[in-house]
Amino acid sequence: MIRILGLVVLVAAALAAPYFFYPIFLMKALCFALFACAFNLLLGYVGLLSFGHAAFLGTAAYITGHSMKVLGLPPELGILAGTAAAALVGLVFGWLAIRRQGIYFAMITLALSQMIFFYALQAPFTGGEDGIQAIPRGHLLGFIDLTSEIALYHFVLAIFVFGWLVIYRTIHSPFGQVLKAIRENEPRAISLGYRTDHYKLMAFVLSAALSGMAGSTKTLVFQLASLTDVHWHMSGEVVLMTLLGGMGTVFGPVVGAFLVVSIQNYLAQMGSWVTIIQGGIFVVCVLLFRRGIVGEVLALIRKLRERQARTG
Amino acid sequence: MASGEFVLETDDLSKEFKGFFAVRGVNLRVRKGDVHALIGPNGAGKTTVFNLLTKFLTPTSGRILYKGEDITRTSPADIARKGMVRSFQISAVFPHLSLLENVRIALQRELGTSFHFWKSDASLAALNDRAEALLEAVGLTEFRSHMAGDLPYGRKRALEIATTLALDPEMLLLDEPTAGMTHEDIVRITDLIGKVAQNRTVLMVEHNLSVVSNLSNVITVLQRGEILAEGSYDEVSKMPEVISAYLGTGNG
Image (cartoon, rainbow over all chains, first blue to last red; front, side):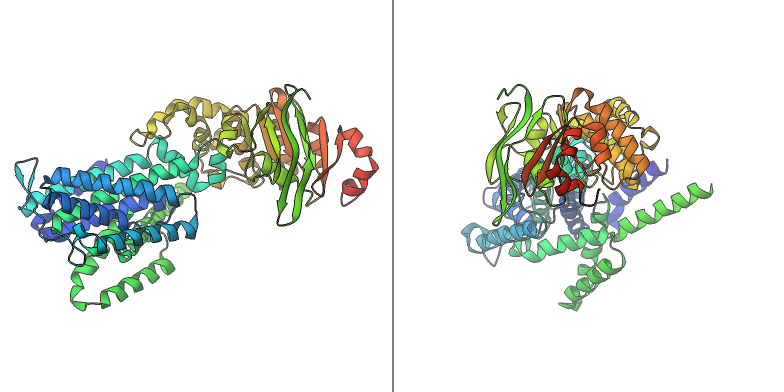
């Protein structure tokens, strides 16, 4: 009952939000929330720390930007193209990186994403330092004008909810069950006959595709695809969002993303201090609440329940 | 050599670590239906042989045959699919999953939906009856919804055996099944292995000689990576070289 009530409140809040907050800010936060959720699928549920997720966000951003501005695709196809491109890059990256673990996995993903960065810097279609600018938002399905920020907001919200549901279902599926087994004890999963590399690769491609979907959507919102999207700072930021909110929880990355985007937006006038503040928050997070915000709250609830069960 | 009689054979198996031979020229024959124990003093290469057999290590030279088929280059996951399943020295459970889920992980592969990320995990409930039957067989029914990580050590081992049995393996490889257990747990696990071994072939590495003498009908003694002796417990325990190498040190 409480759960259904909570869901109703959440949906109502999400639908009403653009009338109270700046819609572009909300859309940005939603894009990053999806990005962080996709990243969390890999870190929180397979135990793989990728340090190259910007490559998927950025690749999708460029492909969507190019296909909408130059090829004139409608927004829905532009987003699909970007997502597919990110999935493809994810397949190649995953195939190369999945055999390594821990720091080596992180390093390989970083190296590969740097290759994408330098490609984006040099390739003619990406616009180099300028990026792809003034990308038309177009008409969704031919009749919904996305230049209206309210219409665009609801489209972005729908994409976010879709992506989040895909991740939620993946975690709570037979496949997700195997992923958790691999995270908990990979040698044991192997000894039970699971070819764990295949499962990890599948999770990697899913994560890349959804990160790409976030990147494509972000391009649509800002009408811009730039080097920021493929820069390694972006790969680091998504780690921060996920850890801050709580890795391995379904809502944690969402909270983390909203928090980080808020900090960036409201403290923007402080210039480069923002980075230092972010770094400080990260240090505090690692030192004081390692499970992240949502993770700590869940742990607290569990503890209270246990105490209640013991006394009651 | 008649391959039909032996389930698992090794052919001049060696493993070298940077000039040091952990295992050298081992010819092991495990007969169908036997409970075969691998013993030897610390550092004799038991665990290395074990890891070679389960493919967690790659041999430097030599061959491994399972039911007459060369499996020297087969991946560990595929070995399990062929019906040869291992246990681990340190209890191998999935700590943050419930006992029921632990056993179900082993069962769910055969459903063929293990890659279906779009399907609800409620579809796995079809396996609950079998998972519960397996938990009951090892006396863990009352803990079914506990997290595996919260169990005491002996029960974790019991859970691991239930999970292994879920695959209905033809051949079990047990790595020190009673290591670190209390006396009470040892009795329980020994009974369990005895029961399980009735229609299976078992190869185990084991330190506890009373467990070995109770369970196994063939014993291979390893020393410095080579086979020192082989035979029944009574035969082996009377050999002077075995007594000096193993029984005479620390167990006599």
